Amino acid sequence: MFNVKSFTGGIHPLHAIHHGKGLSEKCPITVLPAPSEVVIPMAQHIGAPCAPSVQVGDHVLRGQVIGTVRGFVAAPIHASVSGTVKAVENRLVTGGNLVPCVVIENDGKDEWVDTVLQNPIPLDEITAEDALKAVLDGGIVGMGGATFPAHVKLAPPKDKKIDFLLLNGAECEPYLTADHRLMLEESRRIISGVRIIAKILGNPKCIIGIEANKQDAVKAMDEAAQGTGIEIAVMPVKYPQGSEKQIIEVLAHRQVPSGGLPADAGCVVCNVSSAAAVYDAVALKKPLTERVVTVTGTVGEPKNLLVRIGTPVQALVDACGGLSSDVGRVVSGGPMMGIALYDLSVPVTKGTSGVLALTKAQVKPQTATACIHCGRCVKGCPIHLLPYELANDAERNDWKAAEKHNALDCVECGSCTYVCPAKRPITSSIRVAKRQVMNLRRKK
Ligand code: SF4
Ligand code: SF4
Image (cartoon, rainbow, N blue to C red; front, side):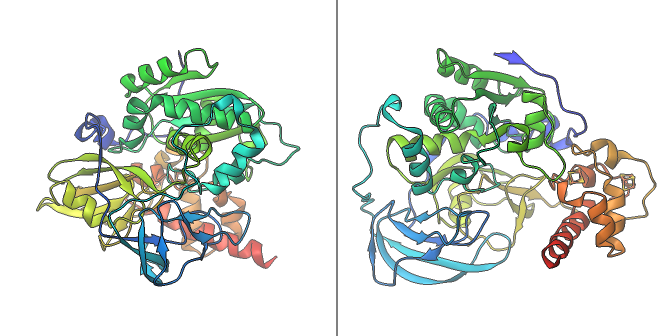
């Protein structure tokens, strides 16, 4: 175990003074019973949505493929309960879009497909090729919120030598504690997953980075890693420590080039929850059908819940005593990068790390005023961009200038918006600029 220095830039959100994490960090993971009906979206990853492979009336088993991939950058979707397909239709999901979903009526039997193993395959009997195929078959994606298909990440181009496998146990978003609890309660499962991922990548150096506000998790992971060669690094508490580029800077002392990927710096970064899911998919042939979600903020009783994919967010909130009367907004994810939810019937997906209820005072609308050129957004940007310039580019619809100012390197962490004394919606403007720059590039 060793300590590392912080990255340059970044912020200490006020929420994080008390982290908001105190509300749920001591709450052990508890199982939320599967609901009577799950709504499983066919788009739960970056890349092309899956095609539904079942029809109304079909009987399905838990772990059965119900959505097949239509491209390389995609991950199959599995039934999270056994039961009968009630509908295959567009439903509302987080973000406000209507996407094709498979609706399954739960028969309450929880019957798994028969390919799932009772006893895990010993890790030394698993080949890298078989493991990579099992990661694809298991539908594993980045569970920190990025939802990038894991089998794609773990198959970098042949000319990119991977020197470092870096595990993200930072969980730097205020309030969220799902990864914290998983590291504490399932450390051996995570370490086994890391060993499998390392085998797939040709056994690079493995470091698990955990923020210093999770000392119990540091200890648990360090104990579980003994004798494996996997190292535990304790990282200073700073936002966005969990962003790929920052983890690489801090743990591998390398920089991802502008427009590049972690593999360009000889690194692969995975979330600790994803590592646990990799273990299940490879050693037990168990696809991804559930995940840990932190339900916190102004709710009756914050919890870390193990939830079936497709469970309505409302069921999670109900299991935590409901929303308090002073709720102003419910967010999927954390306060910095989360997405506002306007309808709690939307389902939990593979990328849902948290459900956060913020108070009215926390989300009070603020009036944006003119930029006072204080430079705080520049100082806080972990990617060393010029956020105020990018926001100006967006206001002028000058997408060429936005491209020149490296809009596409923005990781949308929200740090610039958070520190801006003029309350300018910088990140939202840059998000628009990124979309327009991508459109420009596609037309070239
Ligand atoms: S949102 Fe983008 S521009 Fe703003 S601080 Fe984060 S990376 Fe920098
Ligand atoms: S933080 Fe806000 S006011 Fe300060 S330079 Fe950036 S955009 Fe302008």
